Length: 116
Image (cartoon, rainbow, N blue to C red; front, side, top):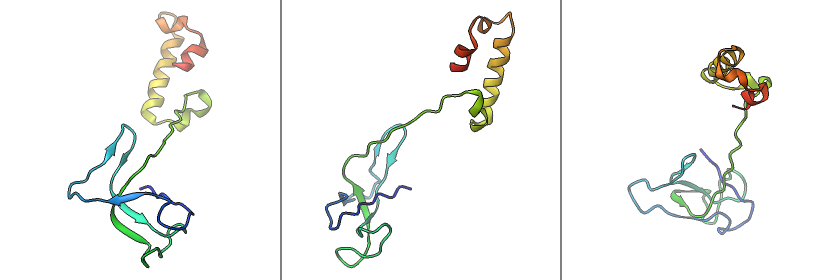
C-alpha cells in the first residue's frame, strides 16, 4: 500500500475524485499500478478528523501525477550477497567461464566482466 499525506490544512492539498465505476479503473505503468482506495482528510498523518468530522473517505480515485524514480543496483563483489540466489549463481557461472582460457569471456578485462 501507499499512504500519501499533506500537512496543508483543508481539502485542496491532495486531489482525489469519487470512483464512479464498479470496475476498478487504474492507471498502469510497468513498475507501478494505482488503484482506487481511501482518501485521508486529516492534515495529521493517519488522523481521524477531517472537514466533515471523519478522517477517511472510501472509493476515491487519485487525481494528479506521481513521479517515481528507480535506482538500479549494479553488481560488484562487495554487494554480491544482496542479490537473489538465482542471480548469484549466474554471476558465479559467468566468472568461472571468464577464468577459463578457452572461453571468449577470458579476453575481457575483469572490469568489463564485472560490469556485464
